Image 1 (tube, rainbow, N blue to C red):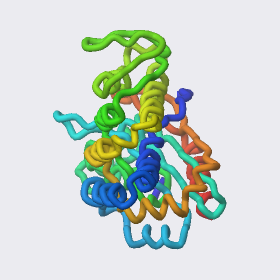
Image 2 (tube, helix red, strand yellow; image 1 turned 30 degrees about the vertical axis):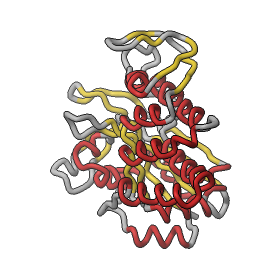
Image 3 (cartoon, rainbow, N blue to C red; image 1 turned 30 degrees about the horizontal axis):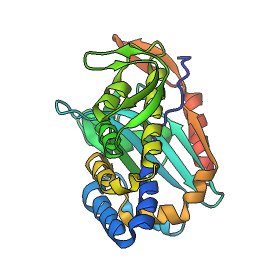
Image 4 (cartoon, rainbow, N blue to C red; image 1 turned 180 degrees about the vertical axis):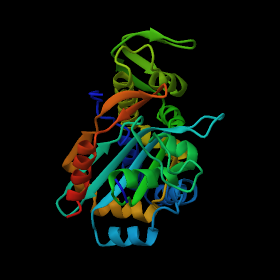
Length: 311
């Protein structure tokens, strides 16, 4: 595979797939076999979705032998009128041998060659358009080509899933750093209670925040943290069924339940020593369209970061 001065805050979408594992652990302890069986059914029948771009027999062998893994995390904003684009794109690497992990965030406007079976394959475009043109398969192929790596698993979370998760835990409370209003809601500065739809409007706002995408990333983090905090409250365990329904309706992954169990058992210590890195580049316009040009030195730096975990 072949391989703006803008600094972007590290995104926090990676916490969503970790919620899945945390809920499985919580559910198994709380309801034993009943919850275990329900969680297995949700993962295997509703969330599990294999892709042609990944050799699943190879990846299962890696998990069995506890080798390092590369997992693509996609936060996708899918709406009824289009196929969606990846709103957040990250590569998480787990190294159980040295009990370490890292997450590399790829800016969604990164200009690169799209790779896959769709007609748009071979063109230079924003990396997040790979999902709109060819779904998870094209995104996996494009990221592998961009970083010259092999991906083992992917986890895709629909933005709507945030709203469903917020409602499933009974709403959230956050400390809002700025105030604004849109056509439907008012968001005062300070303590703020939100249901799912209001939370969705909160994270989607872009143009009224003076920090732009930096502010949007921070609001995503606040909502996700609010979900985690509400889910940890006494009595929230009674809502585990609603939470699993929300995950089942909004999460897709090529991990089956047994793989998740193996990751929980054998890779969990890798999360204790986690580093994060945000790829950077220079914003530019080509034919009137904004892109982030990531220099070759930066691409090679990230390639080295990921490959070092495989050695």
